Image 1 (spheres, rainbow, N blue to C red):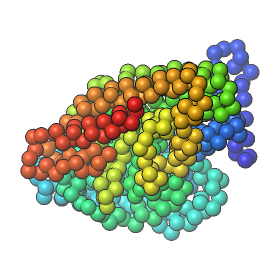
Image 2 (cartoon, rainbow, N blue to C red):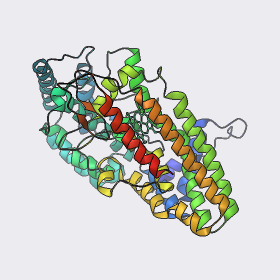
Image 3 (cartoon, helix red, strand yellow):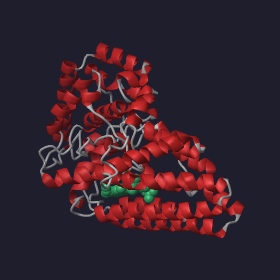
Image 4 (cartoon, rainbow, N blue to C red):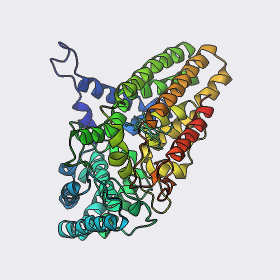
Length: 445
Ligand code: HEM
């Protein structure tokens, strides 16, 4: 509680603030404060407040990295930074035996560095202490950054080389070094996820520093185009959340107004939320372009590493982002993932937020109350979502380039097809994406 109060007091307006335009940072801080204060208005507002407080007192999440961790955990950051330059290569080999040798070499180097740097007894003792004294030894933002670091190390060990190669994709299961296994259950339990691999949260939301630069990079030494594509692969998800937060607050308020049968307030709040959604989607359209995200580089240097495909478990998918899941949940667009599926990759606070919207089911309630204008505003939001899905589908097809060193793989369906023999046809991938999209569009009617 003391730390929450000191966090709030850091938002007090400075004496000069009223004289000049408040900075964007200051406006964000006020928005966080409003959201937390409104947490007692309704169970949806309570879960939005929980989302902010469990995401490093911010949204999009604000993770902190090695400097905020207890000393015993910092070597993980050292190991990642030392291994990072060995991961990417400019030219992939098509020879399985050569690729096996390269994968084994990276893994051996990682094992040696982990053994040299990490003290397992110290890590266990520290994580026990951190888990008992929740925020005192390591703030939540530190846990999020630590999750990002260990997930990045686990993905680095899983693939060994980047672009990922068929030789690693064909592994169905894998034994990880003890240093990478020991902290994982602590992270799973603190963050509230069950996957043995990373998620969009760990690999994108929590992988940026204060200046919004990548902390655990996978394109070291590859040049500007690679670095920029890697950055935007995370940044775009983060920046749309920047734009979406005011809308989250308004949809929570709209639910409260509708419950109270205050129709004029419901309508005006939904109208505002629709405008805010337009801003978030415009940001996506303006920035998902060939300069920020080079189509020939995205799949080999970004998407591949995010996959997991071990023990039948998928890796990171764009579908794990919160904006689109929020809209699906708020607007009642089914089928929703099962709790078991969703808990693989979505931290508990994110799931609680989504489940509160699903439980409320505003479109069903609007039908019941029968106010035409409320229904119209909700349908307008559905239309925006539908158009976004079609636009995203069109753009994402540019990123499905053919790579001879690997099997086709999407995050949504780990290995689509083993094309080790036939290598010239990418239709299976595109068909899979179209099929996935058509299900969502059918439901968005
Ligand atoms: C950074 C550039 C992006 C690229 C290259 C990209 C590409 C893809 C691809 C290839 C898929 C299908 C495979 C999979 O399941 O992962 C996909 C799915 C998805 N992506 Fe993206 N994406 C990008 C950014 C975004 C952003 C910023 C959002 C959210 C605002 C988003 C939301 C989704 C969703 C929700 C799906 C699941 C399908 C659906 O529900 O329509 N993506 N993306």
